[in-house]
Length: 263
Ligand code: PEP
Image (cartoon, rainbow, N blue to C red; front, side, top):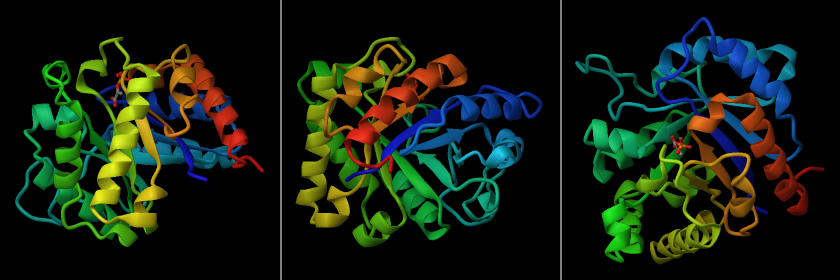
């Protein structure tokens, strides 16, 4: 049975002085057997969040929101995968805000996925179409291209062993309050599984968790978790609110129990 994952993307919010308290509160309010929880704060908050989550045996992982595709060098302001050792065990790669703000291409994202896996970081690879692409009936083709490009050169067995997770995040649903329907999201997740299969990923692809992301809240998570092919959520805005996270993880816990993951 595929893992159930709820990952929090705090984006450019929180500071080193308040992030630890928020992480501690969320961790204590989301104890739910069988659900893998991850908090991805800004780089400068990784250490305080790690320290806060180490208290009380909180079983919540820490993730970065980005990683550079080179190991070291003249790249002012960047952070490489080896630098994250001891700070994070997960990393988001290819988020649409980075594709938009930093011009990240699929080829670059594939190098980041590779660096993350080499360094023992679990990558959350984000893909998703723009509104115009969906309206033009090209959503599946766009996501298929992104998956192929963003996993180019990645060894399926290494990706599966390294805990790769994919997040389907339609760009028009991120931070807009506008969701995809559960049915549409599940159809895209199935299409992603079809792409992996077509790439010859076989069992390595079939076991990968695929999440939905895009304005998920405690009120909407049920629609996505009710879909058997969706394995959790990447949550942005609502992940800064402990009440919201409590509701989201509680609903994910129902799916985890139904999948026999809670024992
Ligand atoms: C995200 O940042 O990945 C995201 C899905 O954001 P939001 O939940 O705010 O749409």
